[in-house]
Image (tube, rainbow, N blue to C red):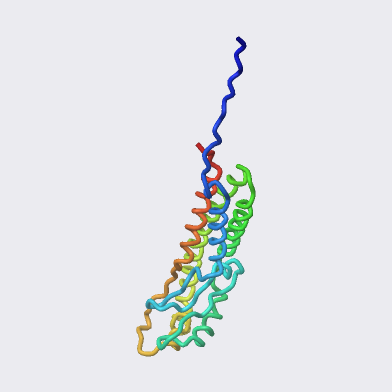
Length: 208
């Protein structure tokens, strides 16, 4: 009796659902890039925000914009003094901001493509975009510290408070410390880029 060859049926690999697609990484990249339109850094004095700068403004090499309101500070006067910050050493902040945005956009484009190479590229772009954002923060802090150190001899020579605050405050301590801080939007952007890298890895990883 002639035996018939047995047909082996191979079950298809289980689907990984949405994480096997580029949707999660594309959303994360889009969030990271869009957050550059929101304030990233702030210059504060005694806990009050004087000026703000968005990630896009950092990429465009723009100066801080006045943001203080209320009884403590007059916004118009702060705006006039903020225009004097053109002498602020910006160092490499513009390049890091441009790099972070560009890497995020490239990662977003890769997330729409299929294939392991695009997934690997998205993972690399996410990590590099987060790294460029961190370097942007470090450079902005360094630039602010250098800028502030340049104002000390000017203050002693001209007999005026830093950034003209003596003209904008009444009955306050003239030794108020200026500081730079970063908004939650900035840190969310970094998390979004890292999340995009993780999602790209999950997309690249073969299903089991």
